[in-house]
Amino acid sequence: MNPPGGRGPTYEYHGITKAWRYKKEKMLQLEREGRIYTNWRVPRLKRYLDELEERGGAAVHEIWDDIFPINPQAKERLGFPTQKPIDLLERIISASSDKGDWILDPFCGCGTAIVAAEKLHRRWLGIDVTWLAINLVKGRLNDMFPGAGFKIEGEPRDMGAARELAKDRYQFQWWALSLISARPVGSTLSKPREGKKGADEGIDGWLRFSDSEEGHVEKIAMQVKSGHVSIKDIRELRDVVSRQKAAIGLFITLERPTSEMIRETKTTEPYVSAIWKHEYPKIQILTIEELLKGKQPIIPPTISAFQEAPLTQRVPKDQQQTLFT
Image (cartoon, rainbow, N blue to C red):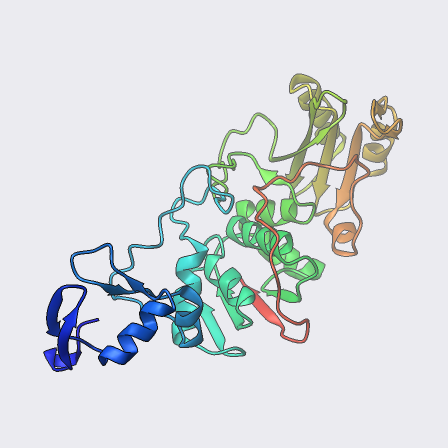
């Protein structure tokens, strides 16, 4: 209750004579209202949070020590090594933009900035160079804002674009796996943006599903091919499924399978689900053309391949957002 510049009415209050911010009548009124804290060397004024909020809150200092790094147990943690707290990005965006403004993140990584922008009713553009990152961000947005309206520019939408992407084997492979929400080999919950290149023991990606009341988890192994395919590929996948003790094997191909390949899949005994009481083809072939038209594998409900982000509020559907690759 010190007066500005040390200039104010001087009088004795609770045994202390000094210059005060308020006149003595005001001080006594505040005391009657229970607004004076006297268990201190010098009496102090009590301030309440709702009063600060009415005036727009207290000013934030230039050193932000009230937002902590993401700890290993944090719900928002997705395993991305440089992931920032969403509170941090929300503060930056709130301080530097208004509702409806555009937010650009040209290196969006796991998507914290665009998630914060979506939550704060901003429009946004996010850019990244790998399908591992795009798949991660796409999953995060769908988890946090179910039904959110966003589109991905640069994603193949026809066979010509898919063949162009296939010139980069691994980017094509990671993109193809994203069409069925599968995780690439080498990508883990702690390292979601990494994919293994080179020897993979015959597996390019995987999904998992629970198939017992005790929570036992089964694996779906998959291979992705962008070049010529033949019956030996199906036989090889069947061997890999057996060796890896996988329940189901999926073969994703850019080229159309031969009739021999299709017949070979039908000679394999189906997988019978203990929980769902249903037979699923043990070996399945999916072409990129079919996936682009919306076809999905015939498999039990799967466990999310990525760490799920917490559900939150989204902006109205008329605000279209864009994710670039």
